[in-house]
Length: 155
Image (tube, helix red, strand yellow):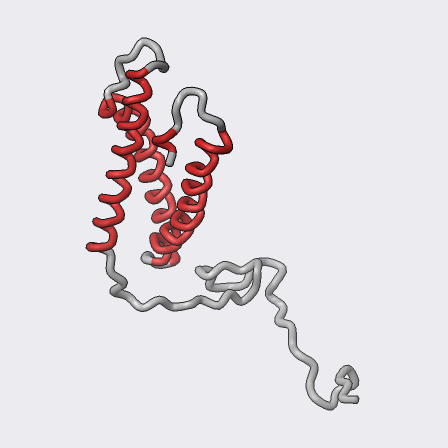
């Protein structure tokens, strides 16, 4: 969709539809991907897995910014306008689309769910899954009222 943006194109008609599709794609894919990465490791390794996931995402973005203009043929332009830039811009978007499709195909062919997923029930909002003992100040257990006690009302 964004490859159709030309000089003089209106934002609402030419740019906004592509950005909406891009935003929906990010919102739909990034959270499940992050959950899959973090769910594939033990709780003790979740911090390391998160760091590796973030590093890979940032590195991919930096490489795209550095390499994509060269691959699209706009790396050596003196001015970022005109027919040469428009052709390079469209070529860059098609390269990105091809890389996304290739990555999706590779993921489809190689990622398999081999381990069962275990749902972890959190004992409370302030106690994490990997904590083995209560947090400070939360060591007292709250006991429910017994049937027949003075605090129980049965109407």
